[in-house]
Image 1: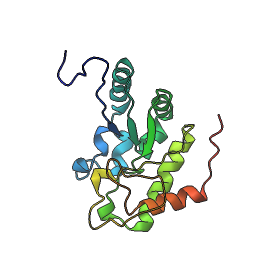
Image 2: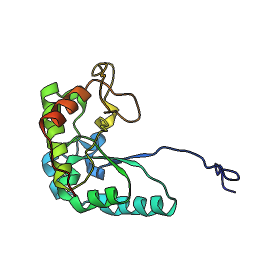
Image 3: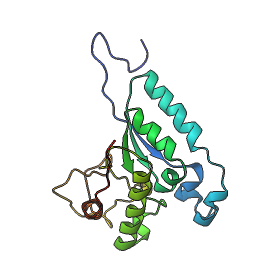
Image 4: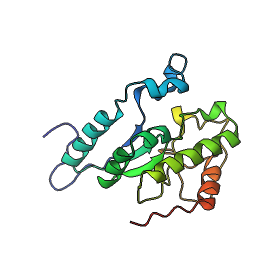
Length: 177
């Protein structure tokens, strides 16, 4: 029996989440690869995501995929494939902007653009999760948020979910199948 494997009929319960973004989208490379240059970079996210989806299917495991809107716009079939595999689609912003470096209005605009890109992929379920790029829900950006189902995985819902709720309340996409 492998490390961490359950015994008898008991199965270990785990939670897993994935930031669905490409290698050049991360903040660590922002000084080297500018946002305006992203379209000239080689996309590698499809192959790595499909490998994960295969592993998850083999192990009957589901995950939450925090999708970057920029990626969703370019690979809508990949986002549909993630959802078709039974995984949750959540939001990771559009341009991977750090909450510590943008205004609330810039956040709302980036989030709305990300939600629109995900909607245009043709996913059936409306995203209810949001993960701030580089985990930038920190004391500076945090404010208690109550009365919604939105969450900032894996921590409790925080400051910027009021913007997500306002945007979703204004936009009622048709997710009819």
